[in-house]
Image 1 (cartoon, one colour):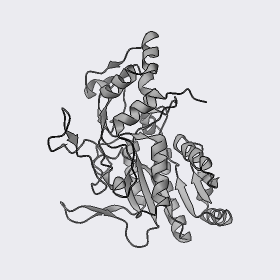
Image 2 (spheres, rainbow, N blue to C red):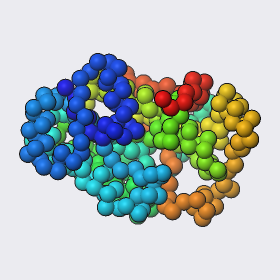
Image 3 (cartoon, helix red, strand yellow):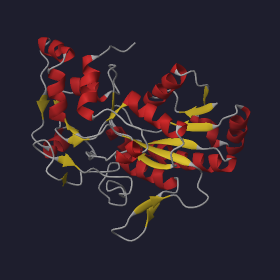
Image 4 (cartoon, rainbow, N blue to C red):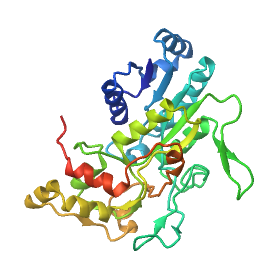
Length: 320
């Protein structure tokens, strides 16, 4: 039996569909249950949980700006709750997986070699790089800061001298996967789908990012458990990176994009990040490139990002 927290959220629902589609028994467990450690331990024991997937968290609606207005809820959902889960799972010896975020980074670490395109290949941050968009750097949104704290709550901290950074869990920390999600998208129209957001926003900010195809993200997370790869942190993003401009080009070349244009839709951009912050945002945004080669080294592969975006738009569906 798989225990699933956050089952009613955008990511939790995707995990539920995946598990149901594979006839894998799972039990949704409300986050509130874990406020009473004894009751949570009893419930997990009674349902026969062999693995727990935590999709619970606080993202803010319609975007992370809302987290600046609801800091207590954001801190509880993204930092305190994972730490509480770690304690309970540790006492039970229950392995688990935690959906984290790549939004704890900013930038792309520069270019690698000569590349095969006009801009070269971005190196991307690996799992050995410490977050550089967090409270410790005092440069982040409240959301990103709490997500970084959430990883620290699970025991993952920088260990080693500068220049030889390693992120490891100390002895006694429960066996946990930390899966870093980054701007989820899919081929199903939804207010939480990145592609849907780009189609609906009045103006867009051009930025380069790693992003995660939702269904592939869920499948890759499950394969970590299924293949029993080593516990630890994994960047679960589609290989490569893509700019907002590039995604809009793919949208415009698709059938859904042509329909939008026929309806008079235009895709307008802010001049730069300064104008975006001045006119449309309350808090800084994370725009970053993550390196997902660690995941691939264990035979868990996602579709290259441009191909994944193209496929999503070629098979675009309205929400059920």
